[in-house]
Amino acid sequence: MIGALLIAAGLIEMVAGSLRREARPFAMAAGGVTALAGLLFILNPQTHFFPIVVPIIGWLVVRSLIIAAGSRECSGSVRTWMALSAGMDLALAVLLTAGLSISTIVISIFGPTPELVASFAWVLAASFVVNGLMLLEVASCHGEAASG
Image 1 (cartoon, rainbow, N blue to C red):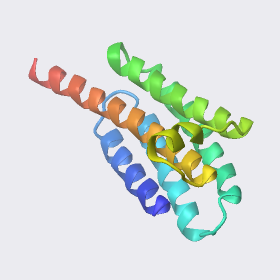
Image 2 (cartoon, one colour; image 1 turned 120 degrees about the horizontal axis):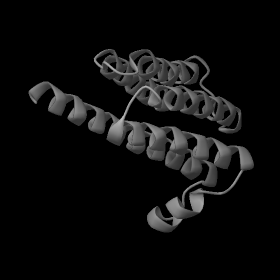
Image 3 (cartoon, helix red, strand yellow; image 1 turned 60 degrees about the horizontal axis):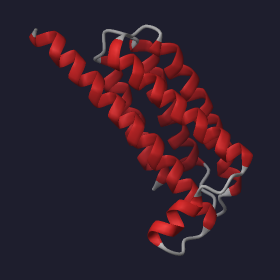
Image 4 (tube, helix red, strand yellow; image 1 turned 120 degrees about the vertical axis):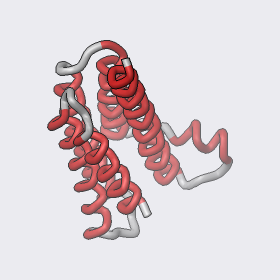
């Protein structure tokens, strides 16, 4: 399930990136890294989460570096949202690397959940939400530029 979601998100991000004028190669590369992470999940299905945490940390770090580099080619609110997306991915990678228990929030909201599953879900959800908001801002700015 996680692999399929990452592949779908990566493909959507690659298509959205291909439509951009600014930072096109960076946006498409970020989508490609996400799809690759999903492919790793599908090709290496494991029942334990511990071996999976390292590729997720790698995915988050590489993706944050790509988006941060791409944000330098943008301006205004798009640059801000790209920086927020890159920052969120990097912060999540640091949290996972440090082994901090971010699952406490999930457990307090949704009740008892295996700690590692809750941490993992929280990381993916936070990354997807911030990236989705960034893509909506990019679309909004490009729509305004085309109409005006």
